[in-house]
Length: 479
Ligand code: NAP
Ligand code: MG
Image 1: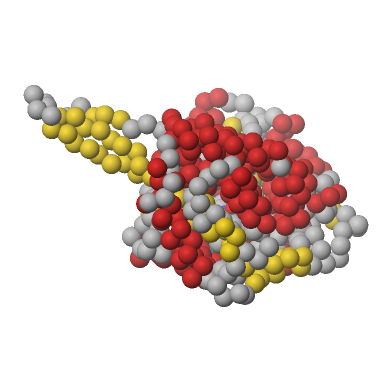
Image 2: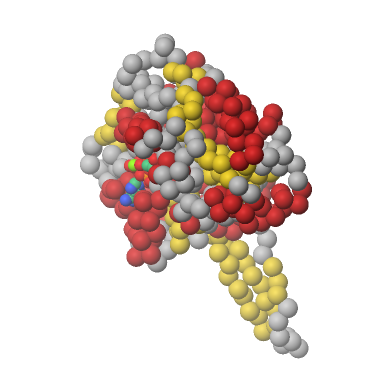
């Protein structure tokens, strides 16, 4: 449906131009979306502004917002299979992954529905005769620029906390995966949100996206995507005197020490990179192994990784195609370059022979040992590519783990409790897992990066803080 969702209504784009919707599993177009313009964005921000400043949304109580979010959670659950099918076709992910994404989406609305009336301010002891109250207030109108890798989950991850706090929102989904956001806009209406609380403008980043961040009516922006575009967003936000959170991906390591439980680690290490074809900001894309067990561990990992199977969404194998031809070419260029640089290719997955020849498939690849300075060891591939490297001791493991520009997630595999704490506290990461890994897991768990992985925190109660601001009220009531 080539329409935007603005002010509670489906509206045609001002320019009338559209963009094709392409199915990653076949490479064929199966629909179109509106190619949003600055004018469309202006209309959406004005609708949000009105809803917040004068409309019904700005007058809702926290309890009412919580109930609307909870209703939305229920609607997502009762439409789960439909939403999962839309998501799988639009992004190419296996059906069981799409189903898990929709379950997580419902959880976002459930969690923040329950949290809405539990975000409280505080009082501060001050001078005699004074009462100081610190109120938690919404920013006003928040902008949300989404990537294509987990479009349904991201809809909930970024909108649910912002709505819980009371912001009116304008969302610009990725041009390559808009379908679930448009379906969810219908459910937002059904859940009873007033017009203008949620607006969705489809289109390209360079036009609709930048118009949103630069709009004078915007108060805050939440962005998830590439480090390069994240920098652009921060510059545009600075020009607009607004704050932003940036979630920009990573090169997240597993640290496997000699005493690790290999049986527990191997399947988790495989899944952490294969899940969603490696198109996960928190994918575990490096496996760093203590040299004394490197060969033994890698033998097991190679065997498991080689069993990875790639197919269309309805085949429901370990992973699906890459989102677009352009991203496929990017992933393949990393694989080709590692090969040309002489990095040993240790294992590959298989693409099911039944897939459509026009689909954007790539073979999962495990490389190692990679020279530490090689691009495959340092840069985010955003595909099913895992790189292995040995380390000498704990100090060397830290140097290697913290040795990229990123800092999003890390995992420590060891039975030594003191080492778990020591290493965990020194890792440059927003989340550290010990003897487990959860790429994207845990709605309740604060999440976010350092350095090139971005800043700001999403998920958990942390997101409620980032989507709100304090106001300090100082009352002189006399002694
Ligand atoms: P991207 O270009 O950063 O896109 C993310 C979002 O930003 C999309 O909605 C995009 O719109 C929008 N955008 C692009 N340029 C913009 C601008 N000048 N102003 C405002 N918004 C803008 O990411 P991508 O091209 O889809 O993927 C490229 C790489 O980004 C991947 O290979 C991966 O490394 C990384 N990535 C990371 C994540 C993550 O979860 N951290 C997710 C996706 C991608 P369009 O859809 O029109 O581009
Ligand atoms: Mg892009």
